[in-house]
Length: 150
Image (cartoon, one colour):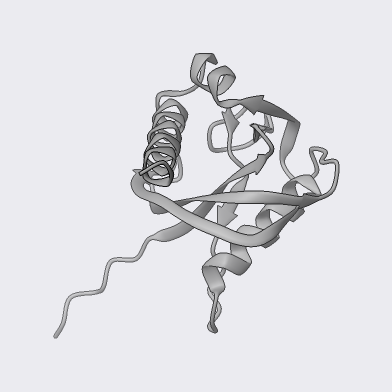
């Protein structure tokens, strides 16, 4: 008899860039995970088959949560693992995306949204988890600029 295969939730997080600003969303105060905290829009990958499931999830979650549409340019940044308040193990995938259209508003499970520069994000009081994401974004941007100038 074989052992059961451990399962986990796969979630995507989108850093949406509009010029020099990045989209940040404050989670609902009634959310069971990180209530009231600032985060990047995102959500769980649905249990469906097909191609481009991750990219489609990034586009869908950004639109459902904020009403913003992003371009097809979705760049993988990094992954991380964490345990949700429910006890489920989550594999989180972080992507850098570009704004396409929409003014944005807090729609699904959000209190508010805002656009911040990278310097503003770095100086904000964020959860340790979010602060790490911002530092990884900062490192990614520096590396990309260095490579572009080489």
